[in-house]
Image 1: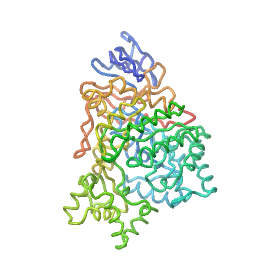
Image 2: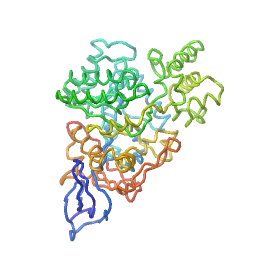
Image 3: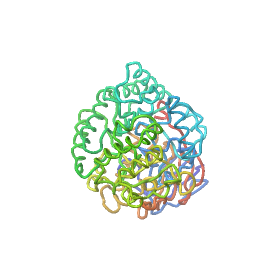
Image 4: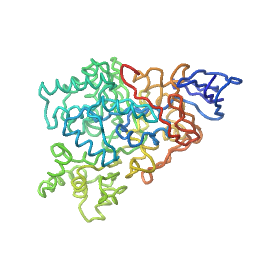
Length: 529
């Protein structure tokens, strides 16, 4: 007795091989048969003529983490076909914490999502998520910025031997509780204070605990891009771990084209035996906190401490002048995505230049003033990349797909602000713009990048491919109509063309609508991969 039969689908199995038309049958949480199921008894038949059936998409670089407690149905992800997200990226994860950072994080979660965080360490977060599962599967890295904060390494400079040993212990503990590796965010404090020796020691600690993966938001995506990529590769070589380069790009017009050099260096490292992959979102704009505009020596301490220092008029003026020296010609490229308070809500969706024109303040003072008034809780979008580089990176065979976004919905607490459209459109955009229109990838190769390639890199057990006996993480979509609809002006829009999404054999999307079912699993190193 079969549970579900997908009839006459174009099966793209995730290997990159040619598609083939056949039936796919599910029993429980597994793919039970690939082949003709005519006449077989089943609870349900779904006509898939003219539609593609693929493994569930793997979001190799997400930031949902604690937001899954605010939106466990993960609407924006599952409606793109995502059945597994990798969280804990860019050096930030839901633990470990120092007492001060735990209090700050809990306050942020109440402000943003109106949720309490009953856990106080990384393992506690995974346990809590397992007890209240989301609609999609989830696995998590442990952030080296978070773990550095947990040992009070919040000031510039190297850690003491004792503090580094303590941080290594925290990393090992997180990996033993299920972390799949470590992540660094080397433009964010306090992760930016780590040198290559510290990074290698922590990656080695993760490897010794069975989680040999180092994912890095590298130290520069602009003027020192090549050097920053080389640093990440060297961490992998020193610690004998795999390397994942997060949201690979070249920012700033003077740096366009450098991705040819970085890809050449990556390929050379792979030739020496280093396991390296990239992830990428298919947009020319990035998004992160507005506080990245601050000089490194200014952006030190808690958000409240930095905002308090900026309240001093002389310090504020000096900081604004320093920021303006770097961004003077670029304020029209910086768009405010969200703020924490209602007082500045009207500025969401406006560039710094436009806000400055409205308020009559110089642009740098406008930007730094927002950071001061919002205690640095300001998200921004930066229009800094070019299409040629995007296509070059996407064309590289070891590039996975990652949204660099959290779960969102079109209403409720996760619908605040003007987020980057990648939150709603990343995977459909790949198929619409870079398969169907630009033909950068074949549809088979695009599915491999979204499924088989990340599954192989992560070492997932029985996921990421259409194989009998594998978990039934399934996406059914129309290759002719799949498309992103979210824009920078109107980002809260779900994509078109995704018909069915099954997670562990359960329908989380039926006929393009969220079912509300929550069959997702927390995948842990040592148990599931």
